[in-house]
Image 1: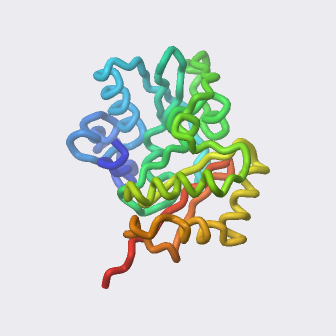
Image 2: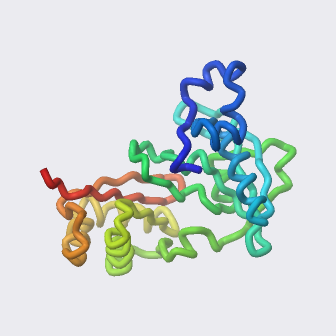
Length: 227
């Protein structure tokens, strides 16, 4: 959904004449939708795969203030998880069309409610799940561990994903990781130590995006300039 849909920023100004952007048609036919379209399409695919899911409505904090929003509650292995496909689509302010953010993928209530407030109808849907995407993928760290980070960065470079995202257990570990990686240049030492045979990646360059609210860092790699 996130790779094939663009947020309908222009159409939302006149949503009465563009009702499809709030439906699964906007996602699957026009590849353009607002949050309700993203959430409905995500629910449709999950239900089609035999996974229980509903669309949750409420408000979310954006750089422009609170606004109406929609996301999903999903049942996996008997646990409720909360996911926001819209904010998975470049919420980290990147213009990379191939990038998917996992910060808002499979969260619990405590995590998502730092930025999202469900309408009263949905307040009974509570998640205490801990086994989220970052935990399952080995991308959640309780300390700054350059060797473990190198392993995941190397894996990302080998798979030519051009981005890797990490979550840290608390603000102190997160701030230390930011300092070690970017203020002190640790990211370049890590990248230079990755197998050069992978290298369609320019190991002299790296960009990053950070989410201070959820202690997440995304590292973007640059392709080698062959000109």
